[in-house]
Structures are given as structure tokens and as C-alpha cells.
Image 1 (cartoon, helix red, strand yellow):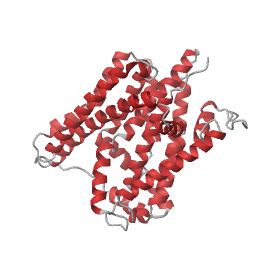
Image 2 (image 1 turned 90 degrees about the vertical axis):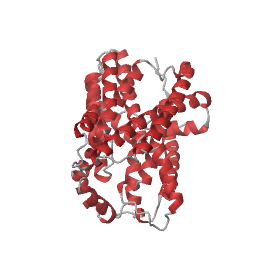
Image 3 (image 1 turned 30 degrees about the horizontal axis):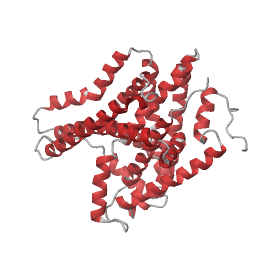
Length: 390
């Protein structure tokens, strides 16, 4: 029996990748942001930066992480229906992803593939755990108990200061003026440490694991297979999540006006913003599903689906070309572009990738890295890639 492809998931992956290229572009792929370049438009750039930070920053990877958990369930479950325990093979699949992500991270230290792959091993071990236990574990991760305990332990002590790695300044100067080999050498260890420090300090590591499990749970209940049957429930989720997001946003803005212990204050803000990012992600996904259910034949959704089918290839290519565009050893555009023109670059590159994805999938069954990942997973490089001539 041929399995039905869930095109809504492809479209959501495409949406996540669109958000990711926008976030990476306005942040110059971790190269400096000068606010004084030739193509910097002060007031417009400031407004665009505020809007994009509120609506996209911190939300792109949450959607991508949720899709990772759902994809894990689908692959394991499809094999389980055939009487095959695919967990061992999937673990090998994660090892391959760690290697791919490692080489990608030498060029761009914002790579999340190797991080997702490492956390993905937990899914392999938890796949058979009861749904109630998984749900409890997911909620505990989302609450971020270690951060709450740290905030409580600090009390009113004003002597604690927030630790910022000195490597951040080194990183920015290197990405602006260093050679390719200097950047790659820095990213082997120091750049990786910076990334992991940021994940730990922001609680992103707990969020990612929670979203993986949430994706697994959504797969178990068959939500995306039955999303057309739950439009009313989805609408309620849209309304509740939007109202909650607005209330959190206003509350966070008020808290930012308070005087408090610097480190403790930052922890509280960071925790609340992480909650609000998740709330907005719920709003974003549920809104997208409602619109997709009504207008799924809209051409824009077709483009997102095609883009999402090549998510691995498109993500890696984003990182490589973004670095070449913004870093000093490339075009060095970090020096010239503000938020608005950086956004235009991201959107233009997204459009080019869509065009490439359409042309590629007209001729091939898989994206190039998707095919390699699949062939390496099964140790079978005879898997057909090219489509027969029409």
C-alpha cells in the first residue's frame, strides 16, 4: 500500500526555512552588524528589526524542531507497520546527520543539524515510552525548571554579573576580516563552544528536546493526518495563543522597565521570552494549518511544499552562500547592509532556491543531500535518483 505524503508538513518545513533565512540574513550569519553601512536606512531598519525580532526571531527553529520530531515518528511508525524496528537504522541516520552538520558548521557556526542530530538520539530511546509519561516530560522541559531554580537561588544578590564569553568579540572580528581557513579553524572548537553556550544560556536545548517530543506526540495522535477534521479546535487554539502572546509581550515590556539584579533580570526576561516564542509558534502553526486547509491549492503553498521537500539541501546551501555573501573572505556585505536590504537578500535567495528546487525535482526524486542521506542510511548508493525522461 502506497503511503500518502503529508504535503502540509512539507509546506511547514518550507515556512520554517523561509523564517530561518530571514533571521540569518538580518543577523548577517553572525558577522558584525554595523548600523552605519552604505545601505543602512536608520529609521526604516530600526522598525524592520523590531518587527522581525518580534514575529520571527526565536520562532523559526521551534517550527523546524517540531517538524523534526514529527518526521522521526513517521519514519519509525511506517517501518513498524511493516514489522520492522527502524530505531537502530534511524540512530545510524542521526550519526550521518552529525557528520554533515559538523562540516557545515565549519563554514557557518550557526548550524543546527549536528545539534538536532545529537538531541535526536533521545527520541530513539523514548519512542516506546507511554504517551502520558512523554507528555509530562515534555511539559517539564518546556517549563525550564533549571532556569527557574537559578532565578530563585539568586534572590536579591546584586553582586552576580552575567557571564559573556570573550570569544564573541573575537568571533565578530574574525568573520569580518579573517580568511576562510581562519574562520573554519575558529569554528572547529571556539565557534562551537559559543553556539553551545548560547543554547544553554537561553534554554534552547530544553526547548528543542521538548519540541522533538511534542512532534512525536502529535505523530502518535495523528494530528496532521486528521487536521481537516479539527478546524474548529484549531481556530480556538489560534485565538487563545494569540491573546496569550499579546499579554506576555506586554508583560515582558513592562518587566524590562524594572530595576533588578542584572543577571537575575536577564534570566527572567529570557525565560518569559522563551515561553512567548513557543506560544507564538503555536499561533503560527495553527494559523498556517487553518489557511492551508482552506487554500491548499494556492500556488504559494505549492512553492513552500517543493522547498520543504529539499529542506536539508536548502538549509545547508543557505548557510554556505550566506557566509560567502556577508563574511570578509567573501563579498563582505556585512559592512554595507542594514536590516532592510539584508531582508531583501534573504527573500531573493529564498526565491532563487525555490526556482532551483522546482527544476531539480522535475528531474530527480530527491534533493542531492536528501538522496545522499537516504543512500548512506541504507548503505545503498544504487537508490534511484534521476527520474525517467517524461
